[in-house]
Length: 86
Image (cartoon, rainbow, N blue to C red; front, side, top):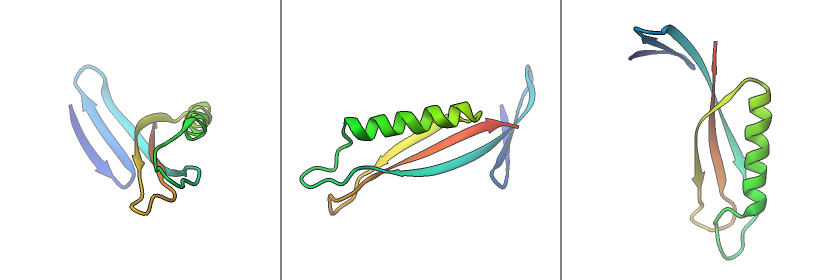
């Protein structure tokens, strides 16, 4: 598969499927404040699930996510990237 990037759009070519174009969208979801630990908790995961499901209803597919802990252990965040075929 060959891919090319143009701005926030990616063009993929697969011999069997033809050319696919994707648009990417990245969001930051801050998590609840932490005092002794910077780990995600159940509330944080529920908010992540809610955002993923909301974007899916808008036609976006989860491409990747990561949890960013902070060095001062106060507030971390999820960095979430969605993609949509255009």
